[in-house]
Image 1 (cartoon, rainbow, N blue to C red):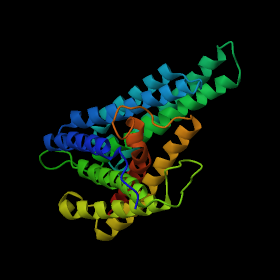
Image 2 (image 1 turned 120 degrees about the horizontal axis):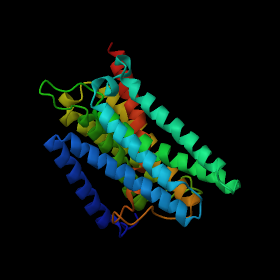
Image 3 (image 1 turned 180 degrees about the horizontal axis):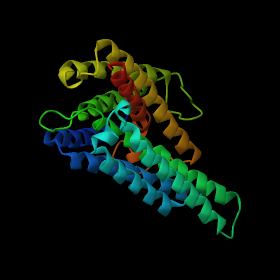
Image 4 (image 1 turned 90 degrees about the vertical axis):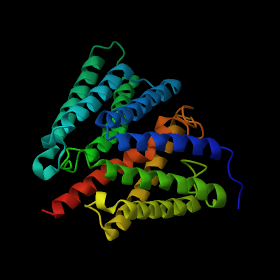
Length: 302
């Protein structure tokens, strides 16, 4: 067994602080609080993404991209409060995707139009368009599915949201998958896993990640079963495994991005963790997957 890494304590303190913010927001039942947390995580990570591109000397339209990210998130927060936009797809809840599709289409048109008036029609022009679009889709759009999950299920009789418990389930499984990978990989890691992407990823860490994710999902379901009526024991096991695998893929995706840009962490904002993008990388993949799983469960009950 290898010794624990020195980053364990700072990582633990950062994690506890973030969980306290989330728990306080849930206890306060504040819709504005949910929006602020989601916006801070998404826009902070998008800022880090464009900064990484700058350091790597990769061209990007960061002002236009950041503006599009803000509009996308604000549009989500505003439309999702209307049940016709934020509800199940069978109830025309998918209308919010029309807004997102229109925004992305306008962004593409604007980027190409801006390039047409540029005097430098070189490879850098295509790179700037590509990396700007990638940033918007990869970060604010994928992360907006957290908001969609919050508003997916009907409000209670008192008008209070109920979807936040599914978000908590998502966060618990996703982040404890990360914890399992970190702990088991640090203590028992011997055999590399996608070493060309990340030198720290090991097969033992992946096994620990899936175990921690499954265990945390099961325990959360036991304590909050009444708040998760769409789930049942078998579905919890299956969903936890799916989310665990997806979380590992999300972490590897960010590692691939950082390896390509030749950087270790997206920033030093969170001691022991790195930056906002290091924090939400796995959620960027698990949130949309879980959203459509929940849509399927709702549809199956029709």
